[in-house]
Length: 393
Image (tube, rainbow, N blue to C red; front, side):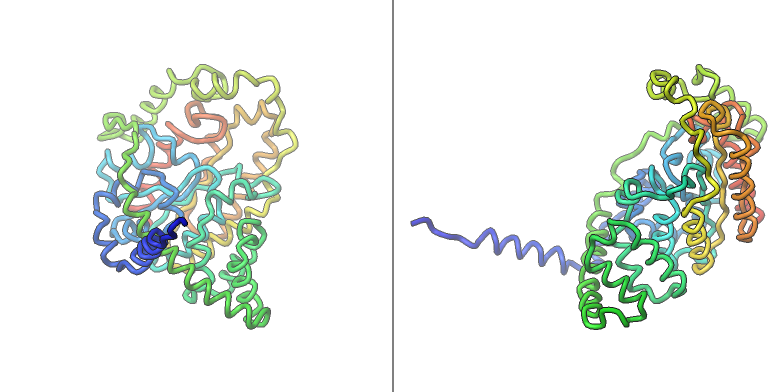
């Protein structure tokens, strides 16, 4: 007769209990300043979707984070992180952005870091392609969604209740949130002022509290492994250090020129691989698009209101479309100008500092592909950041 042993089960339970009850303070002491510094450019989703690493970064007095999307992962000598290091800027920065990160994802992160954002300057990059008719979709939301930050939102009593409820209502439009029965029930319970599901709601809050604690513990354990993967920043300090704005623009143009072989100001490596093979079928593929009617505007308003509630000092950077490419795609100038006008009005009425780059949409070496800025685009942004830091105290 085969002997049954429970040793593996006991070991598994013991390890889980060690994981669960290992003191948070001990874990925090195991995460070095060097790891935190490396995590600023590692572009690891565990940083964006967690809490601890960003909290450590924001506690630095001269920190000015940059929130955006996939443009931030495209490093070159003029990239804002490289620029700040090369020029010994009075501020430091870290990067929060990858493909699919739009306003609602950033909203959760801003709310999570409310205590650390008071009086902090933040750069927030707004991309036109966010404002498609359907807005943020499930495909882009799901991989960037943070379970930890979403659970924390349910228990957050420090943010404005109206902002909290608007955020929860918007999150409940996504299947990723609705499929989480505990989270969905907590949100619906909170939105009804505790009138809906009075008993089940309380039970969900109790289970949610335990889940939240586990998520925070996981964040600390994950943080132990962040900051060990140095990224190739493609830096060349000589192109920016000790150079005037005009010299940096000229250097960016000289840097971009041999890297572009087409009339659309698209980097050769990207154009030859992604665009040229299907150039004919891409003709007119944006002829029916427009960026003036989108749920993304309400999501961006959530971001603005969360910044205000936190006492942060953001600067919004409105990125232009690649005019040369959008002409080919038949997203005509009139519709582009409609978007720019609406976005400028939206940002102006917010009362926050903002930068409008629309006048550069047809400029050579402004972009590295069909939509992401780089080279000269970064130079314009670098100096806007300098001015924002020095004159908006």
